[in-house]
Length: 141
Image 1 (cartoon, rainbow, N blue to C red):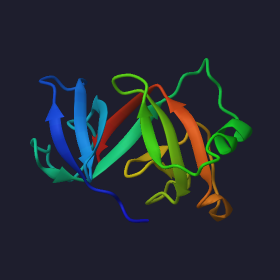
Image 2 (image 1 turned 60 degrees about the vertical axis):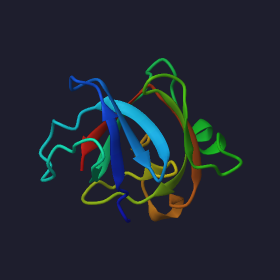
Image 3 (image 1 turned 180 degrees about the horizontal axis):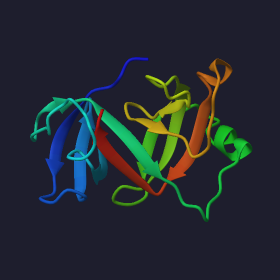
Image 4 (image 1 turned 90 degrees about the vertical axis):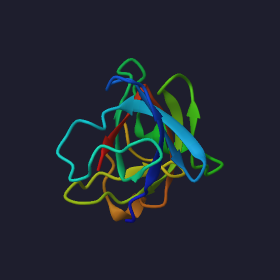
């Protein structure tokens, strides 16, 4: 799997605010967690290209099952539709994750985001999915 790079467009003054990042001109707003974690990358400045990693908070009151995950993207789209500051309806194509994590990720047109349920196995790579993200957070990979 090739990791995507992004450009930091803007950030709010405090960590935990919104970070606006761009993938080839497509802008995504996420909770700024760029200063946390153990990345070898330095904290990016506005305009800098960096390698992001995303985490998601999902709504426990909106449970996702196999049928809703795999049946929600019949047009095979790859994008994030904003439903709030850092909330989205995600449409993606399943790709393999890096490293030791065996869970697949959804390629949503640049951002590679985790799924609301565990999905393993090469046989699912290339499948299209859709799900809701309550909060998208961005970290340094």
